[in-house]
Length: 311
Length: 319
Image (cartoon, rainbow over all chains, first blue to last red; front, side):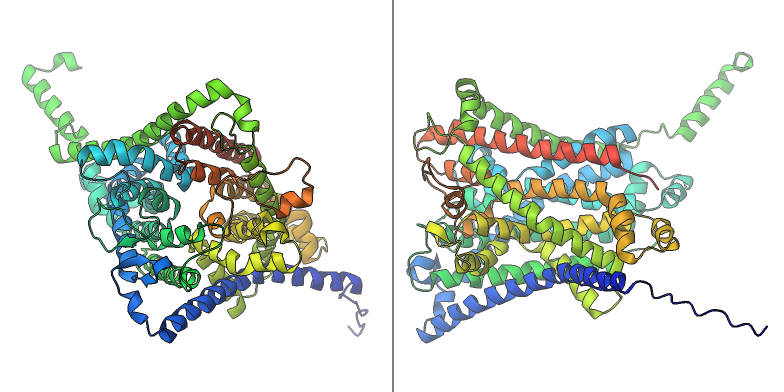
């Protein structure tokens, strides 16, 4: 066997290879845009936030971050007010959404017949598709006067409670769909084993399915909390306190959240007017908000990876 | 056979059957099931009350004004105010999202699924996409305010608004929905089986040729569904627009405004109209006009969702 095989040039047409490289470069550029946007967000927030802090230091006025309330146009930037407001509303939202969302998801995953599921699931998805501005309007036109004020006559039309309830309605579908996915991912064999031991459906659900899906359920709640913290329109429209707020922990009072603080400053008379650093304070609050949701989303991802039972 | 059983035997048989079929009434299990049903029904009830309340408020407007409400522009007079200006604004924003976010998003998805080597850069892109998807929408508004408004003004499209116009809004909204486009498109591309690609390589196609004529066409229905849902999201989003200076009050667009003036002048969007009418002092805006604007918004969103479901059912492929 001394015949040498003829030399084949398998590299192909050089123009074709050039085109391949160009196309690949274009796709890479499209992929890099996400990194560019992330960096742009961090830079724009950091830049103005630093101007804000530096401005306060120059005025010798860092105490403004720890004062009687959040009145940026008057130079009072009490962070406790808006952070406490944010957490009160998010906690009310979670308290509403956890039973509703988990109840709906357990029923859909474990009890509902396939036919009932096919009808009910799209309805939950409709709820998920309702924009937050609509829920904000509903909170101030219905939840405030017709629910909260009926139960607590001392409450105003605008209160953190009515905003919190609306936020709960907003995040219920998120809890429901993420935890339903988690429970449906639990293999049938686990349920069959429980049934085989004589457990009924309720016992199987509570003792077998929910513990097996607990990482997904926990992740859904953290995601929902993160979403509640970042929600703007409902809080802006229904929690009141558009100009500013005093520090309060009573959910029946009007309150201010971090998101609403940003929105109300930005919807002033065309330009952000008022005290010198008010514009920069927007970005400082935005930075805090960005970091909080980043940590929550990271935690939810990590819980899923770390504690997920792999079947 | 049952006829031959004595009464005692029959009673035993019943007891055994009841035991096997689990007919024992266990109060705990019944209560648990009832609780679940109550929670589910409560969620559905909220939706029904919400829609009923909104539609009841909107009814008077549509009865008296009909299509005129949809086709009228902004006005301080509640008798003549309509949502047309907002529809135009939302459509321009949606168009810019299609123009910017869809090609970039699908391109990024193709890179991540087809090209990306397993290296640090790919992990960074992946992390960036997942983090961006969780960033609150109002933070994108701040990004738009700090970067895109300045950018639009810098390239001479600032117009009378100094860059706080619908072009900056479109760019901001495109950045906001980009991670969703990437994630849904990547899922659609991942669902295309390997064999389809191998068939292409087998007849000598290059990677781009395989992507162009095999992968993208096969993933197209999924990408399309994701795109339509993305548009629905962009239509309903309000908060970032408020931050980058959408007009929340009344403004009049002169009748002879050129197309460029429309793009660079003050603008509003459908959900922003809901917001600004809900803050008017005239109760008619709050009681009847705002719900009517919500109905228009919901009709747009539900139609987009219906289109997405139609595409999914019509073109969905099972490999």
